[in-house]
Amino acid sequence: METVKLNIDLSVNQLIEAVKQLSPKDRLKINDAIWNENIEIPVEHQRIVLDRSAKTKTNPERLLDWDEVSQSL
Image 1: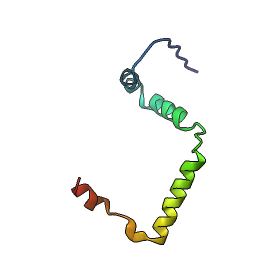
Image 2: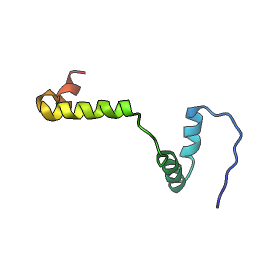
Image 3: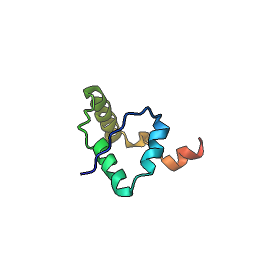
Image 4: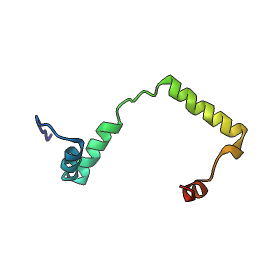
């Protein structure tokens, strides 16, 4: 197993540039390590999403078409 020991200060942009130098396989390993964490979504956020979903099911006309909205931005 390959290991790397770092003890340096990097800005986020510097870290991104360092990761870009890795092989695609190693980049995927980093991606998996970041996103495979058990991220807990706060209950209040879950309620907001469920409430919005219920409102949409009750009143689908409230949804806007992205292509139309993006034209006005």
